[in-house]
Image (cartoon, rainbow, N blue to C red; front, side):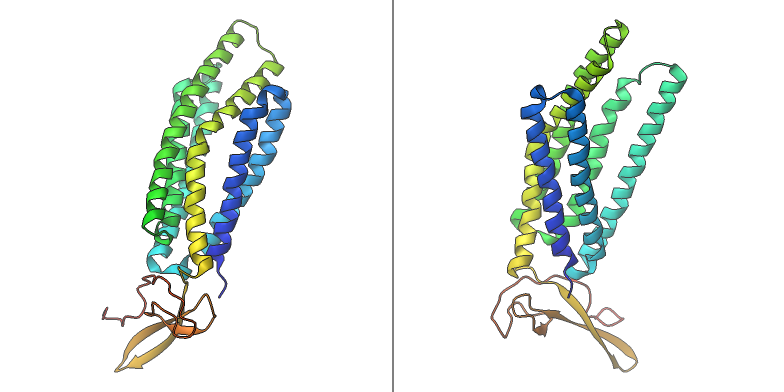
Length: 277
């Protein structure tokens, strides 16, 4: 069986790691880098991290049936929320452009203030739904802590960015700004990403935990098998593959009868007849 979920978790781990390294590097090096160079560096590295994250999210949705019906549903919910986050970001961008055009002045900062916490909260919900059914008890705790930390970090980033934004607007109003100053402002804004280190670290941990569970065989995928007919009713049975030895074992086994590997069962809703028995 192709384990798209395991591959997706690895790719997401790489994507989050790139983001963490980027934020730490920018915080430490921004003062020593020209504004333009910092901006280019942010665009390239965040682009790589964003691409890895997108690929990981797609793979985990593609492989959603590997770990039960509930995980499959949650993965669909996560995909819907992810699309919603893109729509909201687009709406904010259109609103900002329209206000700039109508008022012929810089955007009202209240709109910018709302965008970051809202999109960050929605993004946190994506991971919450994607990973919840793959986590054990400790993993669920880490996942919820990551979600809360994401919201707090987004608020801190917004507050810090607002003061920098007001500073830039004052410079523009006084005619003391230039393209270089604007790039320097953007590089300073990029440093606020350091607030997200804790939430990113927690999310990274929440990704590593189920990845290790799958890799070790503690969390085994399920595999739909054959149909049997009894008195006109269809009963769908389900076998699973032992992640350790690769042999087919009964779907309700907690221990592989061949290699004695222990693992956790995932409820898939399969194994009942059409009357739900």
